[in-house]
Image 1 (cartoon, rainbow over the protein chains, first blue to last red):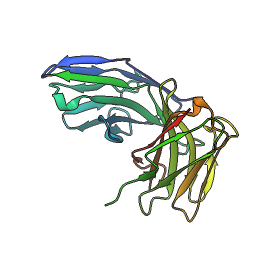
Image 2: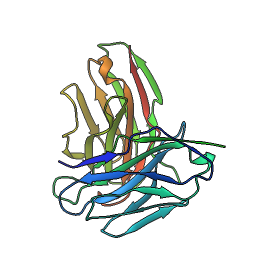
Image 3: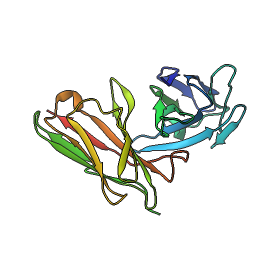
Image 4: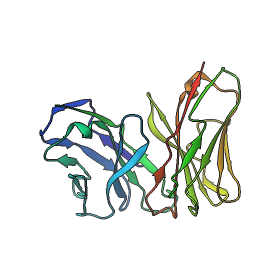
Length: 115
Length: 113
């Protein structure tokens, strides 16, 4: 079945540092890939997505590129802020058939950014 | 516009009691999903509704769990004879079709004592 393996945290960075959170997946066909973010005390929000190979999703300074050859979708940001402190989840949506659009999530990575 | 809402936001119950969790999806969204977020298991899919039918119930962990959706809108997740391992945050999401972005509610935090 589909699975997502996500870099385990927690990750602690100083403000303005570079961020990379690794995410790799196993799925048949061509899934869609997502990064969701959960800020303290809030619900899950879509951060960015990519629906086909070589697509780059971007939002709020974060980027991730759908790499079919390495089955990866790593999240990157060049300069993190204290307000980026949150839990980040990598997820995939199956390509069809009986997947019915359900999301398969990675374990989540806790990011803490210090001033 | 209004997002996905869930109630109650918190629920504390005793082991063996039944609980009902409610989800109000975004108006017009035909697809609805339930997920569970727990410390040991991360975020897991439970069940998917398209309209009032549930073509995928594969994530329900046991026959103590059931869900229904009426009028193509509100959904209720019922857990019978709750156990301590049922303690988790139960999340609901909806979208206009299974290929569209899912929007999540704030969740119901369930604690079984």
